[in-house]
Length: 461
Image (tube, rainbow, N blue to C red):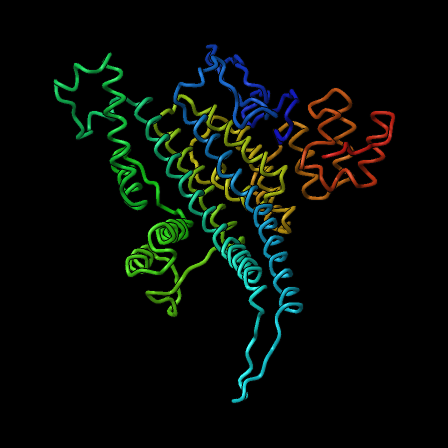
């Protein structure tokens, strides 16, 4: 639900409260007759991830939302660039190999020595051409091996930079956290600053730099102590995260050669390496490994950002929920179902405090969609049956029926919703929820009846 980027609807909650997907404020009257305000989540948008705050912040104002968005954009740019880069280099390697093979056929001959030894010979006039082709072949072969390693190192570099910016935001929104800092400024240095704010920025910079210089394990230990929060509990991806970051260290410092430190750190953190991996072995990275590493870093980064956001800015819970919901929706439209399941399980189960039950249910519908479309209909039905949808509006009811493939019942709800109800005409074309439903006879007939024309799926949908 709330998979729509343009709609405006009213949904009943179990408390009989009405809610709109727009970020609005509704006044309700309690049993005591007092008036109170209740906020509800805004609808998804085609704009950058997350809702725009009512009082738009300046771009240079530190914010968790801004840094999370930037992190996602940067690591996704790496993921999208790797495949075409590898394709180009693989084509170049093939071209170099073909050129060498053709040269060998035409310019190199096999001679047999008196002792029976066979030797490949090249006329001196062709030696320079041979060496040129050999160098091109060797360079392209090395590039095919090195490029994924370079991308992996860049992936971790982006994460490290993101972590540093998250810590700066933390100190900005909670200045009192600096009181525990051991960093200080002498009077002689203090008078060189234009303002106390500049001095404060200097302390923040030193504090962040001192944290970032430590290991990734120490990063989490420091944050857990300073922010009084559990970050690694039930974090199943932790061992993978440590192996990825330690492998990156090997590429940066040891050309990928396994060290005793790599083995010691990984084993201590529960990484399963295999008994045959010994000191001196050379590790590699291919596209499959990079994709797994990307998913891991994406998960660590998103979860860390949202946990800190909610911990340090509890008043911004609604904005945090809106941003998390929109990230999940975007992933669902891109059919990246494993990431959707990871993220929305975190949103609906791990996070115990959310801004509204409507937002939680919207995420649950999207989570069920990801399970269904990735082939696990049983899990989808189990999650749907775990909720009581009775008091919800027709947009939730049609979602449940569609996911359970009750297309006759879903078509009946379409008729009740009509042409101006909670679900708009364009929603039937754009919501991932309706992916299978809109090809059914029930849907096509009902759409024709409601809107007076055949359903045509827009290009690019």
